[in-house]
Image: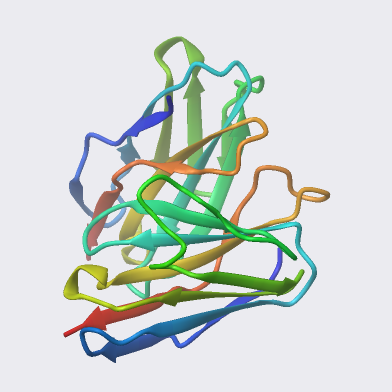
Length: 116
Length: 114
């Protein structure tokens, strides 16, 4: 399976600031996704990062709050904008290569965000 | 609509005991996929297994086994001879054919006591 890394692994941020999280894959993949895991909760899909076009957001998530970039097939960023304590979560990047492992998503190590 | 229910919030067992984690799902799709992931205290999500809806054969991988029962919409996960390293949160998930979204259950926290 692909090796996925995320930066930063964790951060503590002040309310009102923004943080950009990077996701790097060691091989080209078809699909990249961003999930949020609030404390003690399950995972919720934020959006699908589309290469060369705007991300596809799930209900309850908007581009102004969570802008996403995907400039190529191995890299994506998620920005958490104008943060509040409610944004404290683990943010996980996942990938799926439709040509190889259909419907199998592999996850990065996550970014643990705390907003004060 | 897709839904995954993991009724067991937390389970504690003593090392070497067997333990079964329950997963019940709901979907209207005829083709779908079921997954189990492990999330150890370090936080990363480790893929354990994927099952498609047409394959009801049970699977065994070392100490892990999975029982897929379409008739009861369940995909249960059994760990035999549990070890302390099995302590983690285990998530069951569901996705439909052609869909990107993985629907996760709320997870079961397993603690294996030495």
